[in-house]
Length: 290
Ligand SMILES: O=C(O)CCC(=O)C(=O)O
Image (cartoon, rainbow, N blue to C red; front, side, top):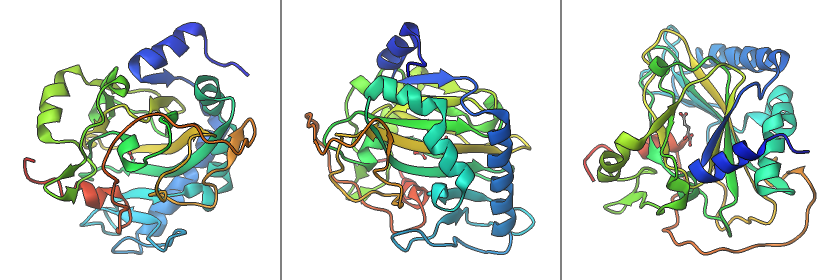
């Protein structure tokens, strides 16, 4: 089912991202948000990362300094495993139809997560390309970021570099350390071209797996919560274990299973699978100018 017009398709392939309004209907949005509020409440009784995912790492990640009074829950890995609402949106959103139109017809899930920036938290996402975390046989990969809250400029919106999906794969290892982020020099060179993606709750941003992106801290007094689902063409096969594993990894969400693999050329260093709850601890290593 085609849900994008020709201009939108062209814009995605030109810019490496596309903003979609009304990707999640209001009743589902309310259900996603109330589930998320429960998880924040749950986090108040923990001092550090907690819960368990498929590979034994914590499911819920909190910022250093997290307290019951001022919770800083920053990541929930594979929420589709613990919430039927998240599972339903991951499978049924109109954004998945858009992904199928762009890289389908056959589409599978790679992974899902929630990124949260609660008021008072310092969390920021250093600039990176998703493909450098997840080498695959080809790069037909699209990350969908669903906005559970209104995202204003104050809230640390996603920032993307248009056209970067057609550019280089940047190094994410620096001085022998996988920092999951590009060198400061790359950020300096590209900063002026970065485009912020604010928008209303219920919107989604579709982003190509090679697009350079990041986001700053939330300076407002309300949350900025994203439900993030990374999809890929069904014949785009992983070359390494998934960094956010789940029972839903590889689920066919549109089209059918073909038992085929398609290869295109790319070259990169293998990423390091995080040993902590999320990539935030890897990105925190990027403290010096590398
Ligand atoms: O939370 C954001 O602003 C971006 C998320 C992101 O890039 C990621 O988790 O890989």
